Image (cartoon, rainbow, N blue to C red; front, side, top):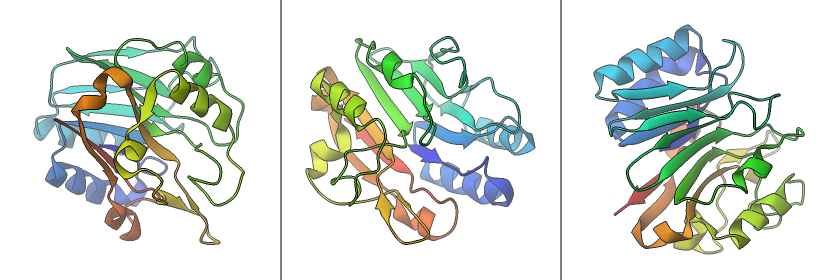
Length: 222
């Protein structure tokens, strides 16, 4: 499961934790995670729920970053030199068969993360709030930055797991105050892993219930 929890969780943190534990995903990736008291609460409570392997981007306590919690053994990495302006915005967990990249890409800001992602060749899964998408498909308008970079990833064999299952279905993970929908949150898988993608979907009830302004995304592997 990957989920933007909105500014570290705030007063919603305990409800967020409860929902995560009840869902029980093997691996959790949180974006807009913060290294503050709420962040420590998330880590401690998930530790009690058998998420024994944990890592967070090295960012100041008031800066949005990324957290990965896993019930499955893995090795973690961070890539601070890939974009020195946003060093805690992308981390990875290396499992036996693939490497999982969890990210929170800045919204309508210049960054270098897609340059880095386009160098990744090993069997990989990339998840999180990418603050981008395909214009006209992942939103009605044409305001996405980095659409070209996403398309370049697709051309290199990084597959949009949601589109693999749902084709051209219009579904959005975040809505503006004007009611405009955007699919900012993605799960991308290397083509070598295509055969193990069982399902990919959003849990809109969590957003609609006020847990965050983003719907979490679930990637199921067989």
